[in-house]
Image 1: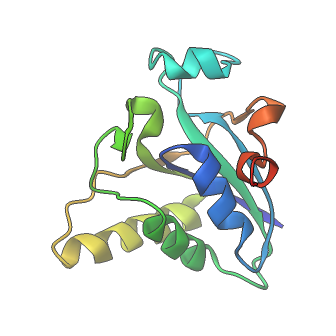
Image 2: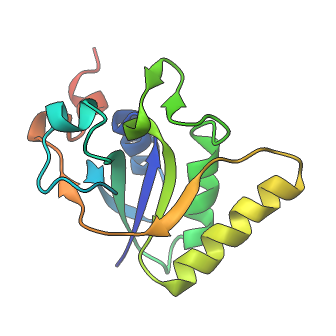
Length: 148
């Protein structure tokens, strides 16, 4: 198994979208990209920690490629919005790809460039993955747990 980390607004929708993808074996939501050690949801919502709400995607590279995961990432949010997605505003909702190795970095940069070559203004940051703090349990599988 391999891992990929994506931030694309509220992590509930991102998690749900990736859980539907064949080859994805698990998705956890949490916080990454910030400076405050071990932040909680309230801390991250303050926009003071530098963290993004993110999804840590575990996947089987024999079933789905990282490039295909990038395609899902681009399709589930608007990568032209800076520090927001729809009604959610703040740096914690930024668009970001947190790469785990050089291969992922090259693929993410090339994927972003393909969109920009089509004339799209992409504000997505591509940066090295750092500590991923799992969000509180009530956030995990939130959409699944709250469907009626």
